[in-house]
Image (tube, rainbow, N blue to C red; front, top):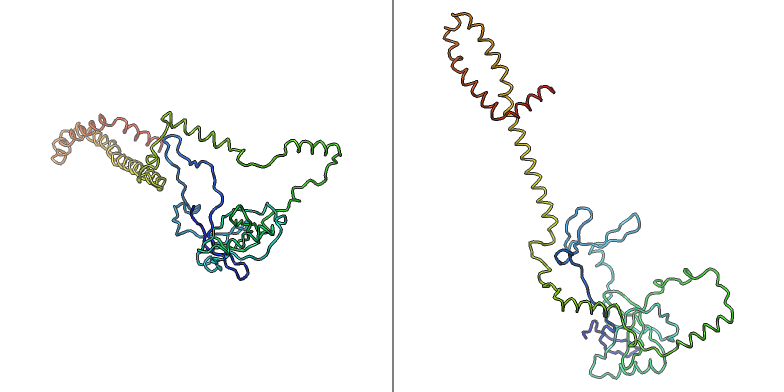
Length: 339
């Protein structure tokens, strides 16, 4: 075991150096969450509810919520509080064990003598054992002042954390308003049933069936080859915690490209509309040339010869446009009708 705390017990003028070890451990099998499709581990990230960004631990503050109000406490605010750094377990009184409500008891720690001469430690241990009393103590752990008791278990002393009085709820809040009437015969029969079940408490007789069956299930899956390479479940760095932001960025780029294409298409359509609009002008030019055909002097005009020379080219261009984009002319024509 590894010591989690080192200090001393202050008992009057006696100082007892000790080391504290966790007296209990959890036997539950540790499980974590994975993706059901590929077995990849699920990450939990610190993200701001307002800006949506991932927040580094160094940028975190604490806050107190009071219904409609939230009071932010910065690191400077917390550092201003008086931190408990005492390495002393101070004995303040001795009380009968029956006066300590078991509901108030919390985590337990074994205390080991931390000196070459354990005489002071053994003196206090035997005193508690002979007087059948508990020592009420104050101590500091993780920068918080705590209340506790010292008691004896086998050949060592145990430090057990105790709740503060205002942390224990009143049992009257859930007690029945009116007690039902119980007959003497019912009490006797109930007591007889208790006698039948009475025995010495042996914790080793009881086992956690759920954990045992869970362990058996895991071992069966291993035997059937239903396992994954643990390293593979972590994925690569490319699929890091900012994958959500990458997806959002790709979606934004995709929309931008589509928007750019639609704009370019609309510009191209507009650039092809003017030739279609000029088509009536060509027809009017052809009509204007019909009267000169009836009069010979008009045909011999030198000024109109270049126009006659351009006439076939214009018709060819118009014919090409009509053959290459028949749908576009229909679209532009429908646009004129709607206008």
